[in-house]
Image 1: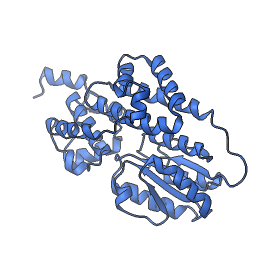
Image 2: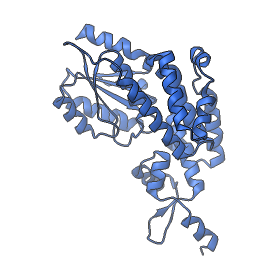
Image 3: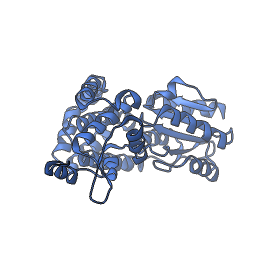
Length: 314
């Protein structure tokens, strides 16, 4: 028999839409795990809809962070919160640090994290913009933004930042980077590669995509971003409509290896061979398996080299 305490816990719980927004895990993924692994195990509210207790949401946050680091769901979904937290804690030393140049330029990651925690978006925006001016856009993206993205994700996992604070940071740094990109001179003349950027469905993380777009724009590419979560057929149609030379895709470890590799194979089949596919990010499968006609790019710093190679081969 359900007690009053149990009923209150469900009333204070999270809907499946809330959990999707909070963790970045798709609704379909949550339902599949419920059937396959027995977790999450939501209750039901008065309308019969799924209702997730806060403890389960905390576990799901840890699971998402571990997946971003390369863990496979089948190995971690059934683990209890304490075991998941121990695995997450073991990841923290692996987070990239600011380069020495960035450390000399600024007070380090905690400086920015403190501004986020104080909800001081005005000064966060100002300091990030000043850092771009001091370091230049390339060094800002690789030496400040990349490790800061990881640090914000870690702080969220540790409970030091709330999900709305992570979202505010994302919106803030997106605006700063967009403003900086607006100052890049548009490419001139013929022979500049036309690059279409997007992510696959159920891949909602867009900061990696934005960093790639910025670096490609600096290399003189004509960039068109579709944003995140574009159907594979839509990516192919857009590439044809805009006469793209390259389709650039960003992946975290959120999608399974099978989904990523099957999707890339399907996209390769739908695109003419003249259109290159570049794929990068944190999904380990990209660098462990090879698909003919798909170029894995494991680091942002390699983009300039690949653009130069495209010019030579083109």
